[in-house]
Length: 256
Image 1: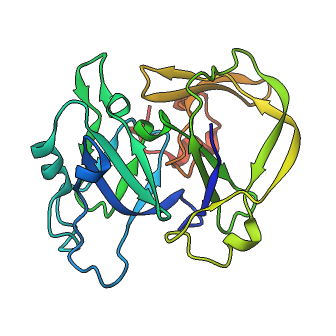
Image 2: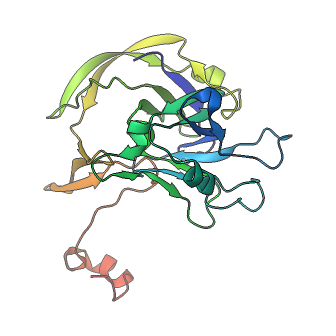
Image 3: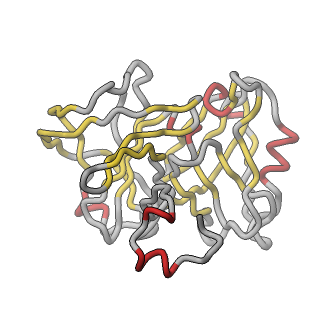
């Protein structure tokens, strides 16, 4: 729904964007700033991973060594109230995460957590993906591009794998390469028709994690894995007993 907006990632290996503001309140005009940077002169931002494998919004639980003059999670806890939204500023645009996305009605709890010690940014998890379509464009691996647009809440994932043809708004890649991704987002400037686009069924467990089935090996073995844009590796559970001898020899005895 609406136009897709694009910004380059800040890393080659992770889907990181720059968040310059995180506000919380019943409406934007009366919302409170949760990221109070100590030095405003340097156009500050926090690196934030767009992580489909994280259920919640994870924000700093300390001042990040003095980069902030406040503790965002403590401020959130003090300001907590039903019906409030978050506004995340990425690329100069505000993205509203409504109460229904960050409060888990099934378990009657918030899906907002403090970051672990040493983490220098945010994790933007499934609470964001419930409200927005996020496109991960890896056409140019040296700097992936992330697109965002309001989610069509009536969309239903396919039940079986199939191919489809879609009209896709594509990022102005050449223009994006010349600019700092943390400062500005850009709308699509042209369209391309893609054919034979894979549609893969997923299972969204309790609205917090995305699972999909993959086949590995010959003959293929079925594994259910988490589709996690916050991880740089592909991994499945195996039994040590079934591994080749050369690999077994490199594993510690504690690995089963």
